[in-house]
Figure 1 (tube, rainbow, N blue to C red):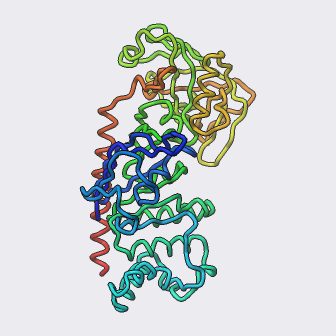
Figure 2 (cartoon, one colour):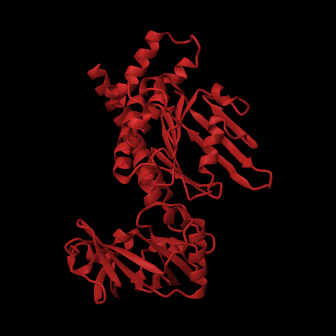
Figure 3 (spheres, rainbow, N blue to C red):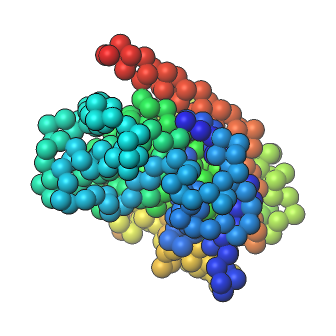
Amino acid sequence: MASITLNHLVKQYGDGFPAVNDVSIDIADGEFIILVGPSGCGKSTLLRMIVGLEDITSGDLLIDGQRVNEKAPRDRNLAMVFQNYALYPHLTVFENIAFPLRLGKGKHSEEDIRRLVTDAARTLELTDHLERKPGNLSGGQRQRVAMGRAIVRQADAFLFDEPLSNLDAKLRGQMRSEISQMQRRLGVTSVYVTHDQTEAMTLGDRVAVLKKGVLQQIASPRELYEQPVNLFVAGFIGSPSMNFVPATVSGNVLKTAVGDIEVDSRKAAAIEGKRLVLVGVRPEFFEDASLVDEAKLPHGSTFTAELTHTEWLGNEQYGYINFDPDPEVRSLLDGLARDMDADELRPQIVVTLDAASRIRGGRPAELWLDTRKLHLFDPETGENLTRDAAAGAALTEEANAARAEEIADARGRDRANV
């Protein structure tokens, strides 16, 4: 296993466009890092730079402290799992998994090859399929074969390039779980590229969010969700995404399309001197006012709004409120939409309601907003003015400790089963 260090990496093409622009990340031995962002943000280019399939324009790439910029891919001892599986259709599952071992030309005996392939197959529940051809396997089984080939190489790190994007939703969920459990058991350093929110939030120890080749923030999924550094990260992480509501500032009162919102002294100090801010509100910060516990009421703001419609999902509901922004705010929302590779950010507020709520579209409804959890953003720079950096760092430290315990437990179970 190995650590991977990215020091000010830049990838510039002939037209001068920096696909990766001054990215620095320290990946610890055994850590699972997710690279996420919209199409064209540079995440796959960065992965290919690590494995050696793309030249590095400037900066240093270190594996276990050794600079490898000029090393060929085969000399970096990294295993890559591709989106399209890259299996040989004429070979059995056994021979597909064994292929990188046979490339060693005498380095591994037949007995070693059989042991390593059998162990990998057992880990990935492929034992019953070793004599089958890839064409007779499901998409999930084929992806497991591709991972088996990476495992037997005993590589220093695994690199995943959107490995689940070709699978249907149910298989993606199953494979997510299998990849997560496998990485815990093996404790191998892993870098995983995805555009999928759920994969990013459920798989990684830390998630690196990229925008136009620039690293915006790297932190645990929970820190990204609760303490985003800027508008882009706040809008990109989370589904449904964070609502952005324009507000004019009057002391500690924010005048918004859904009424006046009073904020605490810390938030008021952070926006002092600002004329206009964007209020970041996650859908779950709202509740049906009639269902709010009385003890919570003083910690929020109650307002009346008309929902255009609601969507009942069984365990919860989504409600939608339209608002009419002024031209300045409309321009800001359009720019943020372009950054996130979306057609537009509609001037709309999404609220999450309890499944028991009787609020329906087309009628005025009384809603409660938890004002303790609001984020306030500078509309010009995108900076989160109310981010609590210390609280965010504590969330990532907590996640790191929990992950270390999970890995230790997984390895203990494996030893007990041997």
